[in-house]
Length: 378
Image (tube, rainbow, N blue to C red; front, top):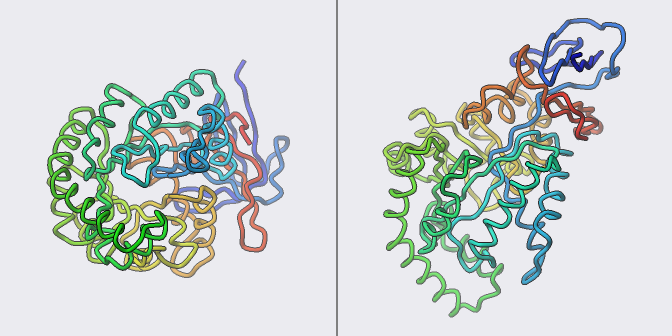
């Protein structure tokens, strides 16, 4: 016998429309979508039904594993805590961002990153997790140990995305050294002299390592079918380099120029949902809202606050110039397609029943229920 579930009297957010109706789920997939109400099933009382969110870049996991300097939590417990917050934010598919190439700011080893990945792998096998988890390797190409960390993931089929990034001073996100000092000198608690030494070291590492690491990693990813992302592109020249390396996703372009060039080159432009909610970048770069106004934004990511993904979606859905279906595509269909998922991200017959029930209260979305492949997980 097939397992069936009816979700009734919902405002269903389809790819290009919102209808009041019902959805029939059978064996983990969407079997039917009907306008109007039907008898039986779960009464939504007019709440929204949206596709499960697809998250491509969350830096949220490491904080559960290393919540304080020199403190390490049980990796499985850390993964479960992370997963619970991800799922309760309406995210049903997540690419957990794992650092590859570790600087002084990281305070952990490549072996520990692999240990976290193993905890995810084990938890998937033991059916402990609510969301569907994959890996995004954040490759800090300026670091000498970048390739060593990358090889910890050789032949790991859970890797779907790798981003090439360089956070050295004077590069991309931190062209403005005052912004770099504000962010890193305060965070690392360095004196002016110590900070100058730190900057010289980072710039030297970037000059030595970035170009060869970018080439090796991009070559491997193309061979393995791993989607490549650039990170913090600031100029058209950066975008030209990304296209040459086979990049498909432009993460967090820092200027309107770079975002426009990325869009023109056919790259999927990704920005942070916290940027939308706050009204601007925390490091003074281009606003995600400005990119939306120019038609240069394709994907939103929760970055460092999981709930910001659904919060930004309904914020934009209440704004002028963008409909709720348009906003929902930024966090569902578009990111799914960017990393090769064609079975989710939209409420459509035959797709996975990854679904979220949402009520909006005081302009804040309240996640009431979450289903992954038709099974309730929240």
